[in-house]
Length: 212
Image (tube, rainbow, N blue to C red):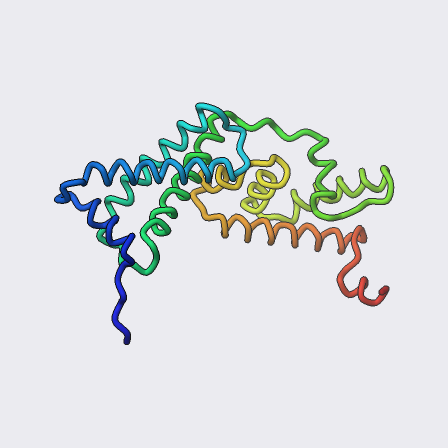
C-alpha cells in the first residue's frame, strides 16, 4: 500500500492558520469566512430561487457561518485526499441546500388548480393531438396518480412535478437526499406511463418498435 501523500501546500497552510495556536488564527478565520461567503453567494445565484437582494445575501452569510462552524468542528477529519477548499466547498453547498429548503416552506404553497393538472401530460412527454384528447389524457393521468402511486410517490410527484416545489425544499421537508427524490419521481413516472399504456392512451415500447 502506498503511503498517503498528505495535503498540498495550500491545504497545509489552511490547516496551519486555522489551528487555534497559530499567531494569525483570527486572520485565518476571517479569510475562511470570506471565501465561504463567496462560495455561498455563487451557489445561491446558480440555483433557481425566488429569494433576491438583501435576503439572498443574508442567506449566503447564514450558510457560510454554519458551514464554517461545521468545518472547524471536523477539521481533524481532513486527510488531504482533496484540496482543502474543495473539501470546504461541500459544507457550504449542504448549508445552502438546507437554508433554501427551510426558506421555501415559510410561505405555504398554493393548492393545485385544474390548469396544473391539465399541463401534466405535456410534462410527462405525452403529446395529445387535439383538445378533447388532451382533456381525456389529463383525466387519465390524474387517475393514474391517484390510483397507481403509493402515498409517498404521490406526495413527492405532485410536489415536484405539479406544484414546482424546489428540490432543496422537498429534501429539507422530508429529510431525504436528492438521489432518493429523483428515484421516487422516476418510479412514479414509470407507473403513470404503464397505466396509460394499459388503458390504451400510450403505445408500449414493443408496439412502437413493431410500428417503426
